[in-house]
Image (tube, rainbow, N blue to C red; front, top):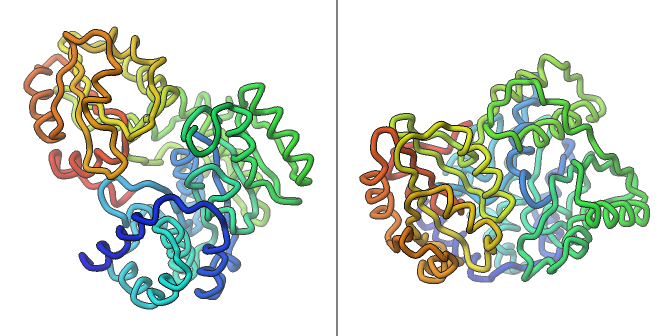
Length: 401
């Protein structure tokens, strides 16, 4: 498996390769997997993974076999491809790469394109009833958009990946609306006015039925994911379940799926005494959602934050809130090739007396725990790519939901 992983990750060196031609070619090579079952495509900025996980859990609760394709992973690449919550086995990853390596090379497929098609190949092999596919970046040129879904979902749109998608909400919304296809319905949460106007224009242009959902559907229901922001994601998944033609899903099954949904790294409570929370919020909106959850806890002792970001992430607007909330902020960096250098991250803060710089993430965690104390709380925030260290340090797995 090590050799296979080495090869897969080497395809990351190709960088972000936007466009659909390579995905079309690799799908054709594999016999066009994804035509045998309904696909639900999820796009947006924040909440894509949570919404996809909610919908997958609902399908499972209703007795269906649900494929789930998401990105990025926390500790193991297997987490990106799941059936009813269980990650794809190593043997299946090796089999796919061995079988199609020559074609992958010829096509020039990227890491994400390979994983997208691998997921569909694995889902077909296991005869899933439906596959929930999270869009990786944008929408218009993302590999998942090469598919013909039965239904598309749009989570909240906000500023992120501005260096690729555009510097305004209108530009980003137009890229996200690239998933629209003639006659394929799209359900959306409420959007900022500028984004919604673009979505409406693009939907009309593409003859896409576009509907804004009732975000309060799941307001009084038990949810498996913490945080008030998850209500709109759960409501979107619930309405999607009801919109799937030829699927019989009752309200009790929807409620059961939402209640039993697991999705690591989203306000995930790792420990209670002291309180340790892990959240992958990596832009201003995501971190604000985490803070709203964190502030609901009555923490008497020290509040410590371990923060790492990926390069080009902008969180300037939420810096004052972090400095107000936490007694100590430990800036660190991951081993990701796209990491934000720890010095760059530390320079974003004004309250220098609260900032500690520690490039080694494991040492940062040890230092944070030593300063937290029994009545305190430790928050680990900012990126999926800290997941591997958390997996090893706290000895927890993210492979089975």
